[in-house]
Each structure stands twice: as structure tokens, then as C-alpha cells.
Picture 1 (tube, rainbow, N blue to C red):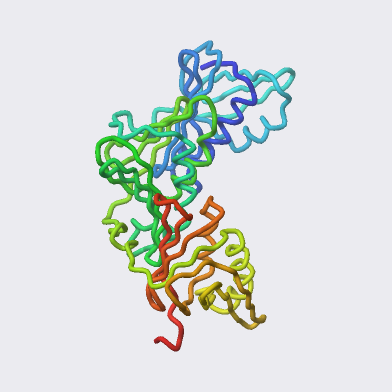
Picture 2: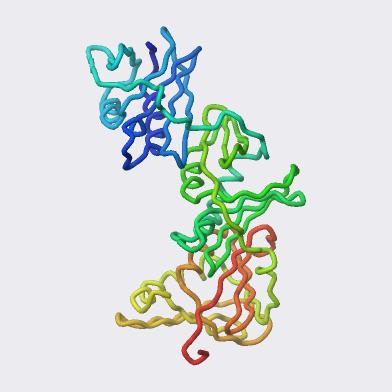
Length: 369
């Protein structure tokens, strides 16, 4: 194998592929990146068996072939090289790297035992704008369970097309974050690990190729752009029926300035997180405001946020972090919050927006237990 490539293009590809390399493995082949040089393209592949990536960059190919290289030292060296072209040439179990007067020789592995990073046989599901999907994940992924031994499915996100609506949903048993967009296509329902979706949103960039496709093959999902393919295993298990849960009967409705309410809760959170694992803050909802309060060993906080209130008065408590993450996902200046009562959930929506929903269960106050 022999090829010439621009250093910056190679470095960006290696930096991306390295995020999919197995951290700890008994298989040395998984500690490297597979270089496949064919036609006019260099394809970089990496996998930890859970996730995989194939990233394609243009290159001048003199001799086609495949080789697996440990890139830990290589990527650091490439960063220190000046701009320009880099020449790779493999000969048996060694690969040489040349750039100007610089010469590097390092060991390499044959690619025969390198596992498939992306399944070859897949079926397309949908095609949608990259920025839309990235935003949908950003506005929901915080609500997934960080670690759920009893229900691993909750550590992922539901991607579902049903009745012309593409839903992205995350939940952890205490809250739900749900975004949807109208989209035509065949109905499907899959649960993708949260880690895979985070890596995907970091990897897909803006550009002329504004759309990407979602495919499935076996027990894997595949995300495809013009120069990149990312795959991940799917999570098994039944997802909670989120649509019925978020349909509440509100007792009190508040409309507030998103930034003012968020900053107030963030200040209270500094004190609340010292008090208990629930990060408890109390809302005392009156006719024209929400009074936010909390106390812990380091002190107490009280602040009033003016709101438009309908439905009466209410005292209810929530996990401050849950509320902060929900409000940070809102991209509108005003937010509407519907409260179901002292022990009932609340539903948060950007004012006038139907396709972005956050659902949060309250924390019971001692007097109500």
C-alpha cells in the first residue's frame, strides 16, 4: 500500500476515528485504525465492537491495499508537522511515513482480522437534515438514564417514525425529553445508545452535504453522510409509552421569561446541591410570580421571578438540575409550564411550540409524605 495525502485532512480523519477505538481490549487489532487505500480515496475505520466508523478522505493512491496502524503516537506527530503532503508506504509488518525531511517508521498489523466496523447489508429508514437531527438530540439526550442495570434501554434514546412524525425521546424514570418533526416514511422504532448519539452529533459537521441517512442492518443502526458512516448496536427492551405520560391535566399554568427563570434556578442550585442528592428547590407559585427557595448547610436562597399565572396558587418542589437541563434546551424567549399539582408532574414547552416537550416529576416534601 502506498498513498499521498494532505496532512490536515489525514489528521482530521484520524482524530475522528480514534474516538471509536476500544479503550481496553485483549484484541490488539482493536487498538488501531484500519487504513484502506483504493481508487482515489483513503478510508479510515475504527471500532470497539459496540460502535464503528468509516471516514473517507481524498488521496493519491499509488498502490492499493489495507493495513492497521496504532495511531496514538502518529496523530501527535502529525500535529507537529508543517502543512503539506504526507506519504505512507507499507511493507509487510512496517509502515513508513515521510513529509519533507521527516521520516518515521512504525509497526503495522495485517487487516485480515480487523472486525467489520459497519455492516455491509443495510436497509434505509429515513433521510433528514443534519442540523435538525443534531438539535433534536441536543434538546433531549440529557434526560436519558446515565446507568440503569435494571433497564439498560433507558440509557439510550428512542428514534421512532410513527404516523408521519419522527420522534426523538429520552427518559430516566423521573423525567422525559421529547422532540419531534413531521417526516414521511415507513414507521419504525429503534433505541440507540446515548454514547453513540453523542459521538454522532460531534462528528457530523455543517457543509454542502446537509442531509444524512439512517439505515438499519441486523441489530445495528447506521448513520450515513457523503464521507462518513457511523454504526452502533441497538438497545433491546420496551420503551415507556411516553405520549400518554406527558398528557397531564394542569392545575396551574405559568408563562415565564426563559433566561430569567433559568438563571434564578441556577443560583438556587448552587445551594441546593449541598443539601441532598435530590438538589431540592421549592416553587411557591402565587398570582403573579414564582418564589424559588432552597436551603442547605451553606445557607439559604430566596428569589422571586415574575410570571403570568393562571389556575391559582401552588407549592411544589423539584430537582433543580432537572429543571436547569430542561430550560437550557429551550430556544425560545418564553416558556410555558403546566403543573399537575403538589405531587403531580409538570410539562415544560417553549411558548407556542408543540414539538418540544419536557416532563418532570416533583420531589415530595416531608409534609406530604
